[in-house]
Image 1 (spheres, helix red, strand yellow):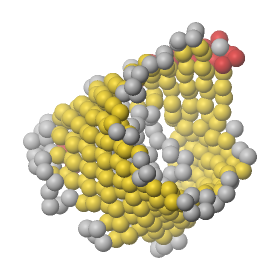
Image 2 (tube, rainbow, N blue to C red):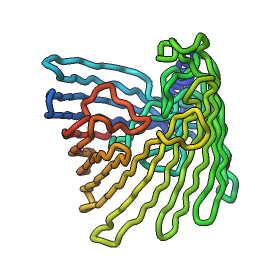
Image 3 (cartoon, rainbow, N blue to C red):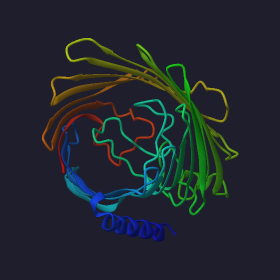
Length: 377
């Protein structure tokens, strides 16, 4: 069913781009990178990725717009570790969607990115993506579904979505969604003081087969409900909070997944403007509604300074109070014409892992650096 949907949407996008030739667009992004972790055992990764994007945008009249996007994620990388080389290559759809929109309404269907919330780095509302805050390109897989949004004249808005065919874990999920079982949810966001306040809900059924749960229960399909609250106020100092509760009806321990984020940001009048942002994040998995004694927390502080019009430097420092460990990530970026260059260094202790951000290797544990060049056309 998902394959048929992709074929239909892809065909419509291609037909639309040909029919509405004057509104046709084509662009692409070509990142190339090398990552080196000199600690024992020595590891090195080199790779190249290409994401071509075909799009069209057609105004039917003054009130209605029809547009779409088709993009592919293709990459190949090699990892040298423990005296051997491993190759990883893949070609898969990145975005395939169609959208109908008016001045106050939009409906988008297909493979798309759905994200929302007030937090920036450690996000309790990272339900449908896995954006790594250390990734300068902010790449993430999309989800298959339909999203509708209605915008009121006072800037309040309502979101409704339905998803199906998303068999891989996403966001904070430990278990993939059950195959061919629909997911659905929504979000209401309204103006509040000098910012906005919102609540979100999502329901799905997940599959525990081929996981550690196989030995704990004879059932394998379970319901899950998520509810969240977020608030952002922008005045002299930006302030936000974001909290999510996920309940899984497993009839065993660790039914409740609780995440809370509180953050602040401010730009100091120093040089070209020194941006400071800090977030305190608490996450807890337990068989009780309240925050347990085993809850973990992370404090992250980010500094960002534009050196000039083409170069920028940023620093993120992570502190885990429970483990008393400190990690850091520094990124120097340079933009010139169609090229972006990044020099990144990291120091990530072995036990430090950002919740919801997974990596197939331990390449980013310990000390190392990454060079990246990105060509945009």
